[in-house]
Image (tube, rainbow, N blue to C red; front, side):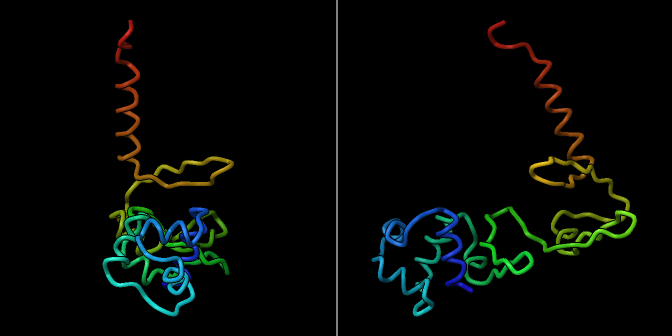
Length: 147
C-alpha cells in the first residue's frame, strides 16, 4: 500500500523520483527502494512526504482507495472518497455512513444538488449553500472601491 501510494502521488505531481528525493533530502536510490517496497522511511521522512503531498501520514501508509478497478492516490487533507453508490429506480441514493458522519448529516437534513456537465454532481447542505449565497450577494452589493 505505502509503495503504491508513493508511486500514485509522485505520478500525480508529474515528478521524477530524483525530484522527490531532492525535496525530501535523500538519495534517488533510497526513494526508489521505498517505491519498490524494499524499505520504509523513518517517521521524520514520512512526515516530510505527507506534508509535501498534502496528506496525512496515516493516509500515506494505509489508505487503499479505488474506484472500480482503478487505484487512486490518497486524497489531500480535507478531501474524501467515500466509495461508489448505485442510483435506485426512482433516482434515490444512499449516502455512505462515513460521509454522513463526516459531514454530520442526519435524517431530515436538506441538501442542494449542484451539477456541472463537465464535472458532475455535488451535494451541499442547504444551510451552508444559503449562507454562501447570502455572503456573495452582500459582497456584490458593496460599492466598488474606485466608484
